Length: 275
Image (cartoon, rainbow, N blue to C red; front, side, top):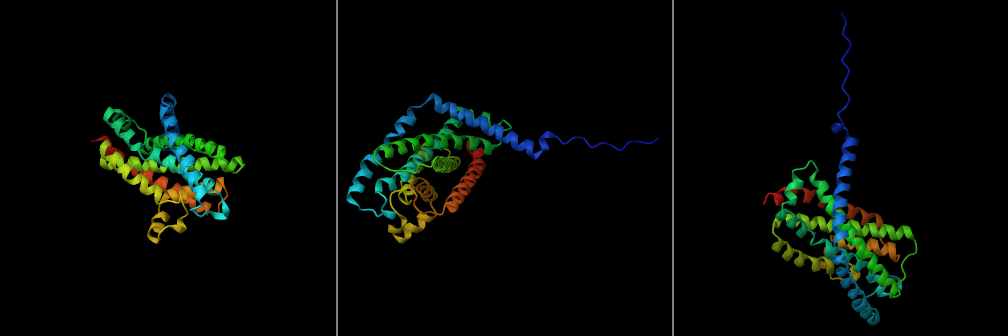
């Protein structure tokens, strides 16, 4: 009696890389939607956060435009040179304290519930990074509108404007993941608040947000070259006002730093959840 050769069972859906990738994207999308709903139901922070970049442009930008104290490339008005830097600054100031939210979720028991689901830790972090990016987009649009009202001439190419907003969101995602990584180390809101305040201004002033790196002291230029905020600012300037920049390098540094920070925050998330 002959026996038919056994037929190999169909590949399990869970073992299918394509299906696994789609499932991961679906979970990230769900978490992104949850974070978006939080923003929708509490818009006060978005409005109040818009005050600070407006003051930087109206006061700092107008004053230094008049005194001509800071050299700008190609004779670009200082206010136009400053606007992309203030966009990046406003996103940084929002994102760098994002770890406080995840500590609050730990204290409220929300993080523990999320950790027992099959959702990968990287998806949890990516969803929160996305929310930070959306908040930065709102701030970026506010800065663009205020700067335009003050007479700044930005590019009229919609693709460049959209790409600039994407760069802004990626930069915000990096700094939010940096904040969540710090939360996994310090595990306490008070400590994280102090560290956030301690590193925010050095990150800002050691970048090229306010002035070209070439006028910095040599040691500060070295720090500026390893500061991701500098690459974000240079990419924004290149897209919005046409200053020369190495766009591929700016994008490579930002994307690489964001992927590394998501990985780091995901690895430290269990440490935060178990405290």
